[in-house]
Image 1 (cartoon, rainbow, N blue to C red):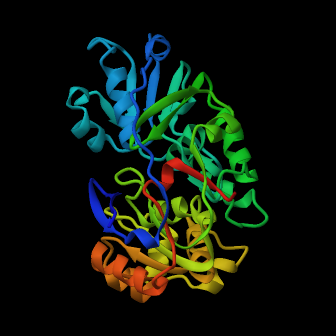
Image 2 (cartoon, rainbow, N blue to C red):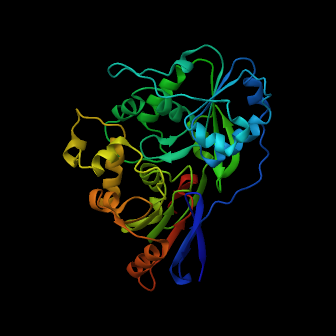
Image 3 (spheres, helix red, strand yellow):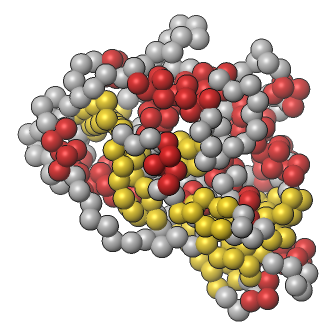
Length: 365
């Protein structure tokens, strides 16, 4: 009986599926690339600024290598969206990280944080991930979402329809690229991931190059699919887990069964989901064109996921939110979740297993 380990937060959880029920297994494994930092270290000379857009393990791994080449007397400033996480992972950077909260802007104007408007070279560092709104959230998109007011609103306005389209360049992605192009002296560095480790690094890469950096696998659709978002940095919130799930759904038949495994240690992950979980927004509110709440597309993607598949969620979210308010079927542990799935499959039904959906691009044969 195969025993599969799927990332769940900072640990891995055991999933046991009988051999006759196991379909395709997609389990990205880390490799040992040569991490080259010379060009970026040169770019960070003088009064350059480094913006660390996320705290995923690949981003932290590359930043650790990069920081070893930065002399203590370097004038390079380092900004982070999650400074405490970075300092915990890289103690040598304690005292060197600067918190950069989103700027405050009157009205609906797009306003970049002050350091983004200053002269001098700027390097933005992030680990790309698939996304149903942008196609891919790369360093350009993440920089805007972190440090430009109303960026997510602008991205949502750029699309006439909100059908989930992971790995397809969308008008929302184009809108963020235009905003990012207005940041003077910028270099965007994307750290491609395998098995939660650095696989390779792209500098100022176009969309297709980043898309090609994901692990591409042909997977015949099965009756069910087990989806792991990828652990810490990929499954921290329900929003990120749902968005990652859409990259794997070509591996399951319509109306099939989806077991989504995500720790959600930081909760729901968007204002819209929090409002839905507390009854402050309804389906009618979501459909109103004159109303926008940050992350409102999360509700649409979650609703569509529930409508088209039989979804079971294994997470650390309080059941009152996940089950009672968001309408998700939940399980208290991996054993219970897999047991329910196997009962629905029957003796001959197949389940595909994707351990790290945030690193994969699944395609049907």
